[in-house]
Length: 93
Image (cartoon, rainbow, N blue to C red; front, side, top):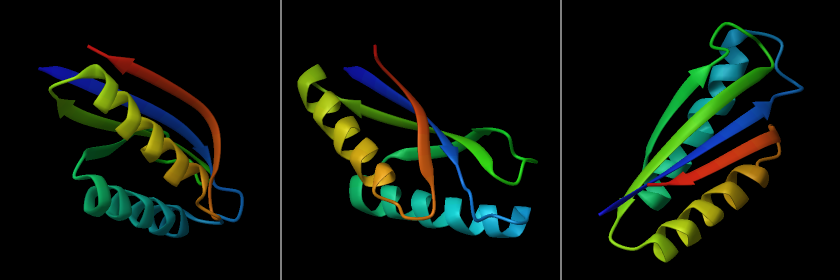
């Protein structure tokens, strides 16, 4: 069994309040959960309007499959028009 963890730092330029930031994040998290059946949580910057860090965790039986899934997740988040990916970190244990 392997565990893959992807941390994605985001900048949300059009967010003018915590409410609008959370709306963008909820949309991203819901899409990821529905499409990939992964665990997603906001890790830091909960009280900052335009920044956030998401943590995504996946469990699988082979590293190659996990790497592919996490890569597709990163691509999906990068394609979001309301958020800009500023940094990513990928680890597989």
